[in-house]
Length: 421
Ligand code: BJ8
Image (cartoon, rainbow, N blue to C red; front, side, top):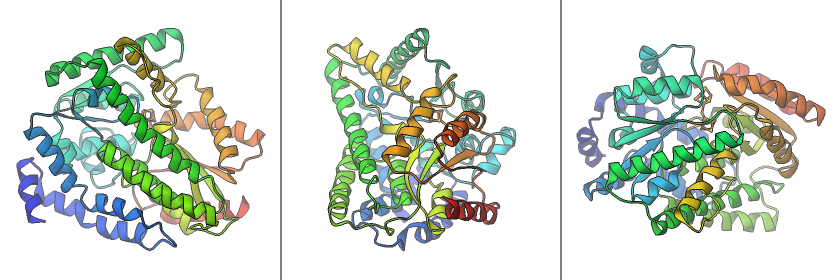
């Protein structure tokens, strides 16, 4: 709308490019989401959030800044949102899942790195992401090589603070991460002029934990057969968790869960009982990357769980409550260290997670999703494949980017897999 154009211009958005970027999205969204069979009523809220994702939500952030608040963006679920909220800042998760800015990303980055990184940097360079424009600074991390080196470049365009993420799970590594959490707290206090106290931190922990709990509830409901919500809709919800106001979001997901609970009681689903139930595991799928879910669900399967950072790795672990501020900070650090990202070595806990999820969600087949050139997940496949084979669970590895070029091949492979499971 015209109101937003003025706001976008003020944020330094390249309006012409932004128009080009947004032009394709309504059609993609419509075709991917709107005509799904027996879609829950409560998905309307999330349709609305999507329709206003560059409008109303951005306006809220602009207003927050007018009142003296800060907006902080990050790219990894390790970054402790609790601390950002404790200084009354807004936290936005900025990983990018769109093909549009990839070409621009490739102007400053090698082509042979993962599309998530190229798109993230490309969004900033193209000046088409209002969240990047509204952010006061961003928090990067030393996870994979691609990300940690890309922050050096991003810092030329927006202040980029980097957290040092350990690579192992030993005592020294926990200590390092705890120190990094403390260092971030000081950084946030300096940036906002607000001191973190026990009260503000406890409230922030409760808020973020609550969102984790409603997402757990949503995922628990996906364990039912027939499943009451499509994988696409569930993925959309986790993707939006990174953008929406946490309290409002939690309330809306709870409403949806109430509806889904009724469905489960009545044995009502979005697909017939016996539809092949798929677990996706691997690289994250930031918005608007709905590609693999869309193919699976158009080929007669249904995604019932994602072991990814846009899935269980985002919300399964809660932050334990501490009795003092330093204990609370320790617990915040501890929680993150239970996220079994492939950037760790060794990372055997992820194998256990996958085998557990296969049981819990009554999985018929696993699709190992690997973003092109994402080495940590690609290499870790070796161990996961063996573990799944030993448990006699069919697994298919898919390596893909954000483009549509490989759609026909993927459709064929996924179709064949679904017929086999
Ligand atoms: S905790 S998965 S959000 S680092 S950028 S590793 S896709 S090559 S994102 Fe991640 Fe944190 Fe780990 Fe989760 Fe691969 Fe691309 Fe690297 Fe990526």
